[in-house]
Image (tube, rainbow, N blue to C red):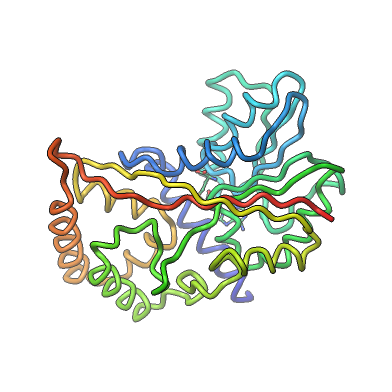
Length: 286
Ligand SMILES: C[S@@+](CC[C@H](N)C(=O)[O-])C[C@H]1O[C@@H](n2cnc3c(N)ncnc32)[C@H](O)[C@@H]1O
């Protein structure tokens, strides 16, 4: 098995394990980000939409509302259990224009010019072969179509904005321990195709997208406890996969330090809050 196939298989296994907890960490992040993404896609009634790495459906549902009547939304994901949860939610909500498939998001099996929008929330940046896949996404778009996705933001030290900067030292220690247990560099490397806005523009232009719009907006994370924040961290597969490989002593020590440092961020109402930057990208083919 190639390294990228191994990374994808690990990812699918991790999300299979996470699926049940995914929407229940108590910290809102993926859903508000999905709403930002769908708003930026400017979907219209009748549009055909593909959602890459759809997970349990945070993008599918607002997208289905935006394309009704007459539109369709297709969600694909490598994790069977994430798809199973999305299927249950789709049938519970009685949505007839949403279809789901277990499929590699790097190689969607649809004819060219099938979609008006290809969307991806916190997913395409997890695909190890994404730069090559961008060209496939371009080919899937009909005239006037667009690729819209969210991408992480890193500060000048390469620290992800989604993590509280007050915990920088502890989280750096966690990351260095994760490297020791075999955390693959591509998961942590901010020098990637999506590491900053110029890199994103370059990768998308190389894949045949000539108009690329990168927008950043603030999003506030709120939680009741450090324990809740850790639960949220663990529904991110890469973190969960490698956290589980840390020895129990390090897990305990890090969890205690994180809880203590987050407690120091409590507002007068007892809620822990910090601001993150949501970055979304809209790209139109040449
Ligand atoms: C952070 S979750 C985001 C899920 C969803 N988009 C949301 O907004 O909540 C990442 C998702 O990408 C999926 N994923 C990771 N690699 C994938 C791949 N190569 N192809 C398809 N899905 C993939 C995972 O299984 C997981 O469901």
